[in-house]
Length: 424
Image 1 (tube, rainbow, N blue to C red):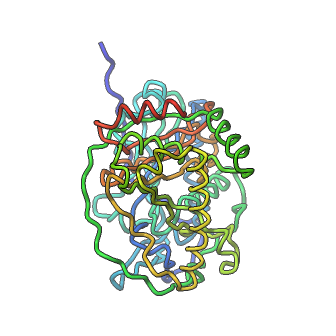
Image 2 (cartoon, helix red, strand yellow):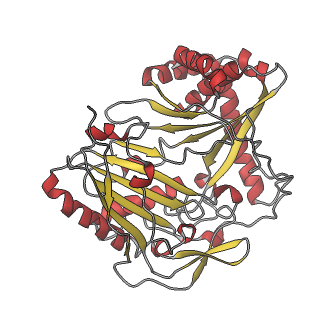
């Protein structure tokens, strides 16, 4: 007979306020922050293997203290999102703090399958929510720490993409970890400087997108380091160029999916991704390293179905590298006010594949005082209007790239899996 389903008991949410005085007033967001594409909440889980259960209470108290101390230099995170003028959100530096939830699970991490998919604990039980009278859309970041009976933890984090991109949120959480472990100040000095980002004229928005709800098959696949290295070696041999793991993994998925969905030869298939543009802002920001606002820009490529099906993986890698270079040029063009079209407009149909790389954002390197997480995964996986793939680091000690796939419907699933197995 199966055991009882795991349960989670949450304490009421409480505010962790900055540990010292912080400035008041309001702060602007940047023109990149305010694009419609980033006005979402990002939810993810960090899984930490078992500690000595006796040390668990101390570890949670230190984590809470780490938040309080980090909120002094990162004081905007303790504020609230306001919109005194419609379409012009800003941060009110109220110093209220972040909502923090402590919780206890009724089982060991292993009994919860180390939070592997499909989750045996509902995601709502692992994620923080403020009291019912508080609008979650107004908060900058919330945290929940769930303790398991083995001494392991799951940290559930929700952050506003209006205020951070992934790299910026990871920078803040690394500072929380440093302060929790006793540092007197963060190793990277944060800067706000949102008004330093140019606010060029907005290109025409074009018609509003139309949405179709798809019934995607959800699956998880891992691509081994050996498979990635094999393609990198092929690229080097045939082109005398180096390429990244992102280029290789994306080329494999894009080709396998084109073969699986088998569009008409001249039908378009599109690839969409966002890339960091921090390195392109060094003339604008006093410290690119400390900036924690949005620094991403959309890129991609469009080919005919037949072109992708006929191309080698090496040829697709080259096309992706060219698209990344074009993205840098387009971003600089946008910064100077020269953009003629809105690059945030993505065709939301079955011919488009959107990939998101979480493997190098930095959440895997956060240490709140109980070591780095063994696994980090996003919970923003209920979007069914565009085919998508998220790249994660697999749970330690595995290596390679884990793909969380929501990109084909059932009738294309078998062929997609077969093609992936050939290359992964």
